[in-house]
Length: 244
Image 1 (cartoon, rainbow, N blue to C red):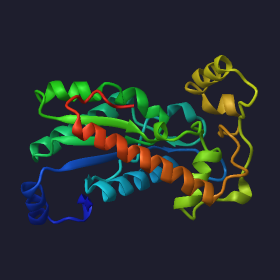
Image 2 (image 1 turned 30 degrees about the vertical axis):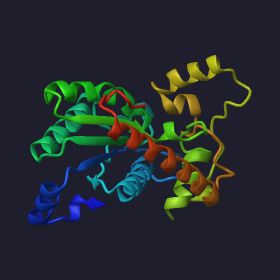
Image 3 (image 1 turned 180 degrees about the vertical axis):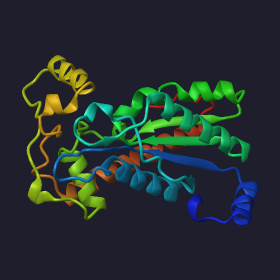
C-alpha cells in the first residue's frame, strides 16, 4: 500500500511511472451517531476498510473525504455538503488522478446518504474521460450478510473493533424493526431519509446494547473478504458497471 498523504513528490511520481496504479478514495460523513458513538463514525469505519483493502491489494490510498450528505440528521448535529458538491469533488479528484496517469479508481462509500450523488458517477466519468477512466463506487455494507443499521449493533461492533472512542455506558436501544414486514421497513426508511431523528427519536436505528469487539471483527473480516473479491472482479472485467 502507498498512502499518498505521506509521500514525497519524486518518490510518488516514480511509483506511478513504474507500475499502473489503482487508487482508493474513501468517502464518509460527519453526523450524529447517538450518545455512544463519535460523529466521525462513518468516516472512521470507511477509512479502516479502505486502508485494509489498499494494504491487501497494494493500491494507492487517498485521504478520506470526511464530509457527506447528512442533512436528514438535523436538528441533531451534522456537517453536510450538497449532493452536487460531493459529485463535483469525486469527479474532480478522479479527473485529477487521470491527469497523473492513474486510470482506475475505487470509491469506497461509508454513508448511506452518499448513495444518490454517487449513483452513475462511473458512467459520467467514462464520458468525461472518453473511456480512459474506470471508476467503481462501492458501499461497504453491501459486502456483509447483516442488515445495515445506524449506530446500532453493526456500526457499534465495528467501532469497538477499530476504535477506543466508544462510550458503551451511554448506549441506548434505538428503532428496532423486528416483527415488521419489508413494506413497513421501507416506509420508515423513506421517512428517515427526510428526518432521521423524527423516525428514530434518539438517532439510532437498531439495538447496539449487545455489540462487542469480537462481533465487530467478525463483521469486518467478512466485509474485507467479499470486498477484496469484488475489487478483483472489477479489475479483471472490461465493464465498469459492476458497482453495488
